Structure formats: C-alpha cells, structure tokens
Amino acid sequence: MKGFLFSFIGVVWFSIGLGLMIAPAWAIEILELLASDEFLQFVLVQVEMAISLIVLVGTEGLPFRILWIVVGCLGIAQGLFLLGATIGRRETYLAWWFKRPFWEYRAWGVALVSLSVTLAYGVSTL
Image (cartoon, rainbow, N blue to C red; front, side, top):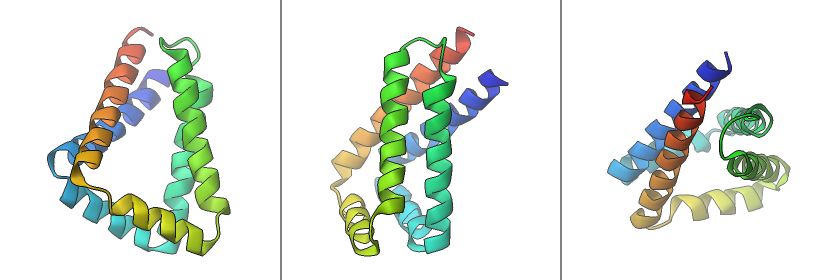
C-alpha cells in the first residue's frame, strides 16, 4: 500500500513537472484555471496539505529522509499560508506565482521531476 501511494504521488509530480518543462504556458494556463475558483482552490490546498503530510510522516525508512521532511514541511507551510492568508494577500501571491518567466517554470519542472525520480528510487528499495 505504501509503495502504491508513493508511486501515485511520484506520477503526479512527474506529470506536473514534465508539463512545466515542455509547455509552461499551457500548464500555467491550466493551473490558473484551477486556482480561479475559490472552492476548487480550497480543495486543491487541502489535497496538497494531505500529500505533504503523507510525505512528511510516511517516508520513514525511505532513502533521503531529510529531503522528504523538508519537502513535507514546505508543502504544509505553503498550504497553511494559502488557507490563513487574507484574500488580497493570497491573490497577490498567486498573481506573482503565475506571472514568472518561463525559465523559472522550467526550473521548477526539473525540480518536480527530480523529486519524483528520487521518490521512485525510494519506493524501489521497499
């Protein structure tokens, strides 16, 4: 079960990262569309925090444990910020995030693909 769960998380990270590397304009357009609806944004933040909590707690015994602790804590911190921030501050943050140059999106895509490959390596050691 643990292997399936982390494989699913890795596939999601890999697909988002690949989308950001290959077609950042298209991927950001989809992410902007998803973030435009308040309820959907709330649900996505909750899912992101749940995944971060799973990564934080469930990666015991996987290689690179410190990396997974940092990734999980950063995800939870971002989720808490998005939930607790005022609407104006949250909209400012999202507007800043969606208006970055394409090379930054590609760099984040490489980071996500690297995390997914590292997670896949960790799952293969189970």
